Length: 126
Image 1 (cartoon, rainbow, N blue to C red):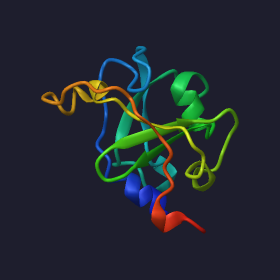
Image 2 (cartoon, helix red, strand yellow):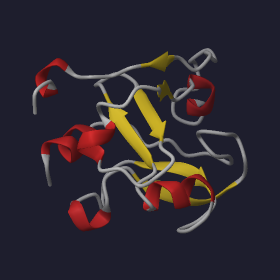
Image 3 (cartoon, rainbow, N blue to C red):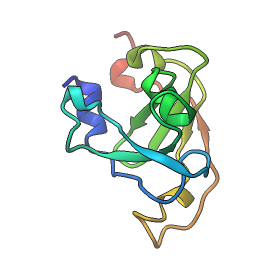
């Protein structure tokens, strides 16, 4: 497990009867940290599609990435497969809306997604 995976292991699981990103009906849970990299008991997120379609397909194809800053979960969709360490330097990261966290945080008010560029200070120059 690398340091990026270790950070994601601290994220909450986001499950519910819909895709956490678009609201469509999910068919699968996606492990934020790949099972092969130690994420078997790690956090999962409800995503539409399956291994080759929808948001789950994008995640499996390395076109959908997640970042946990210790408080909020963000995602980035790319047009082509991208390594995670490179995706961190691409602009357009979106905070997963708390409206989709309702199963985990029932008292949280819905918020709009925020568009952010995330370049963690400790990763500049990596």
